[in-house]
Amino acid sequence: MSIRTRFAPSPTGYLHVGGARTALFSWLYARKNGGKFILRIEDTDLERSSQASVDAILEGMEWLGLEYDEGPFYQTQRFDRYKEVIQQLLDQGDAYYCYCSREELDALREQQMANKEKPRYNGKCRHGAENTGERVVRFKNPEQGEVVIDDLVKGRIVVANKELDDLIIARSDGTPTYNLTVVVDDMDMGVSHVIRGDDHVNNTPRQINILKALGAQLPVYAHVPMILGSDGARLSKRHGAVSVMQYRNDGYLPEALLNYLVRLGWSHGDQELFSREEMIELFELEKVNVSASTFNTDKLLWLNHQYMMNSDPENVAKHLSWHLQQLGLDLANGPALAGVVKAQRERCKTLVDMAADSVYFFKDFSEYEEKAAKKNFKPEAADVLQHLWHQFNALTAWEIEPLHQVVLESAEQLQLGLGKVAQPLRVAVCGSGVSPAIDATLALLGKQKTLSRIEQAIQFIKSQQSAG
Ligand code: GLU
Image 1 (cartoon, helix red, strand yellow):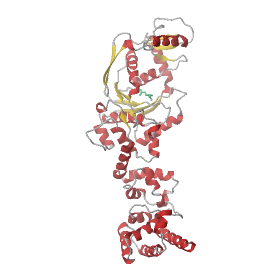
Image 2 (cartoon, rainbow, N blue to C red):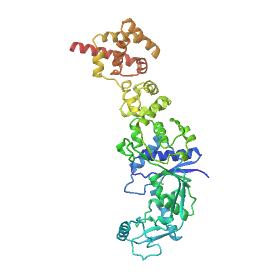
Image 3 (cartoon, rainbow, N blue to C red):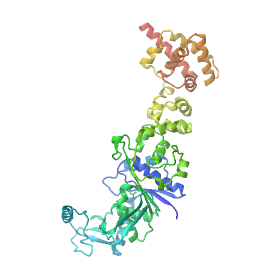
Image 4 (cartoon, protein in one colour):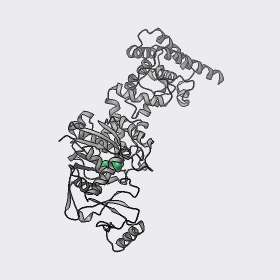
């Protein structure tokens, strides 16, 4: 059997982490088995769907690197096909027109509720009804037997057909309903494995019955439990970011989020870090937890830091560049980003922090962090900086080791502790008292910027003196 999985989001909002995890599992399953991964946009709810949401979903998939082999297919472009199938079901006697009015159905429902029965359609029009104008089409659900689902995550689920009523497959305006479109698409697209959120588990027996009526091959189902917030409630904005792109904005690497999502409800021994290749190799749907998982932002932050520290600096740099651009910086006016990543990654847990702490590499400044300046720009610091300027100016190889030597030797020559030399220098070139190792900072900054910033700091100290 060729493996074909799909991700079928409704474009009624951004791509959220729950959807992304479902997409990831479908993608992994296809990749692991040499199959195909399909993207299908379920946009039939015209009122709630929007192009902005479609774009957000596509952007989220791309950022996560969940590339699809087929699609995106749009359900709104397949209405003719759905109509054809509805007609087929009517023609073969597996569907019927229902003329029951809203009032009638409401009364039925009320009565059933009063009798403490499960509200369900009573099948009144199933065996023929008078044509009274407005009508919907209902699927004739089998009355006998049961539906057995061997769910790869949840195990065997058995539902008696008498529990299921005749579901509407076309509304009075002729448009198809969700259960019909999903079934037609899964059939036409040859989907072999339906991997989706377990909020759809109740739809599955109905979908299976329609598939059977159409003579389609049944897919295998895997219903993935939902993700809960730290308070045990369904994950929502209250628990922090829910949109995948918000994680990009907050400075996470897509690899870290993917790694986090794959581990949410799935494990392989006590291994925490999985490269894309390892995920593909080791992931097993059968090992996904049956119970819901809880989102843990601290864990994600830890993972992000791991990825920032251990990934190829060029890759991290690519993502850092997006954040630096958000700050309006001109990247041409600064060092190669991989170098910045290497210097900063020990200290920064997110790319937002890394970008914010790296502004001085790209942009000159005329003000200093007040506390740092007060502490380090004492009058005598002007002489220290003057001394350093001369030493740096004479340096031919602008590299970490010789820069390190200059700082060390200057401290000795001036008979000062290292901090009394390095800190004023740091504030002079960075504007604040925090940066990576000073030699690495200077190496990245380059000779010209270093010298001109030292000059500027000397002027600043002198002006303070004359003012004070
Ligand atoms: N469009 C449905 C949703 O976004 C998913 C349907 C399915 O996966 O079968 O919840």
